[in-house]
Amino acid sequence: MNVTRYLALFLVVSLLSGAFLLDAHNHLVKNKRITLIAKTLAAHNHVKEHTQHVSKAAATRDVSQGDSTIILSQYGKNNDIPGIISLKSRGLNSGDLAPVKVGDTLYQETISGVTDINTVPTAASVSITVPTGGVPTGQGYVATEFSVGLTSLDGPAKGMRPVFKISSEGVLQLLETTSTGSHTTVPSGIVTLNSSGIGTVTNVKIPANARILLTAQPTKAPKGAMFVSAITPNTSFTIKSTSGATDAGVNVFYMILVPLP
Image 1 (spheres, rainbow, N blue to C red):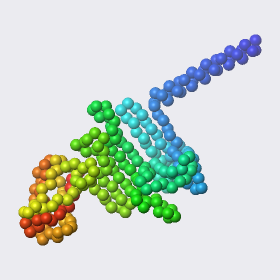
Image 2: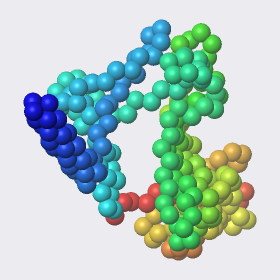
Image 3: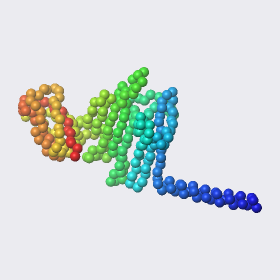
Image 4: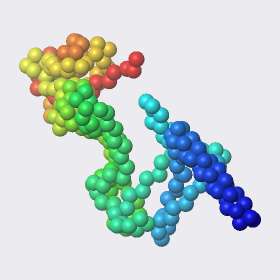
């Protein structure tokens, strides 16, 4: 009789536990909420991973219809910095340290969107890479450069290209008319003044309120001052010299800036 009671009690407890676990599972699925424990990488003789308390630092990924977001939060330990830590090693296994090489991408964010024909090309990217000379022997540091890739309004499909870089020395590298993947919409280039001391630059996206910087380039020094004499929106702009024909053949660099709305 006692055995029968114990068996019955065991069955009741099992059923209740199963129902509780099923309800908890359904609750998690319904809310579609995944909490990721933040990880910190520490490189000594080897790489160690450890988790921090959720109350101190956590990464939360909320997924709902029409929304997918990663939120990084930090509470307490105010000297710490919330964010993403990225480590690249050429070691074969987790924790193996091996030097990176010139051209390696240390970090990259890749952005895509579904097109009207249901393809998913890369639309934009943000990258940190190792430049030439960026891993000097025996020096204990890695040099880096920063680049942004975008796709033009003129396309083409799979036409994302670097639009600017910041070198390891902080020098800005611009997309010019002679750059790979350039269009008649790029913000900078060089124009040679004609026999009348005039240069016209085609740019099918230039707005009427564009600000255009000008400076003379080698090899001929100008006698007069370079200025923008006209802007025809969505068509072109014109550069002139105050010395007219005297400055024929002068090479003029231009850079287009546009104020935010």
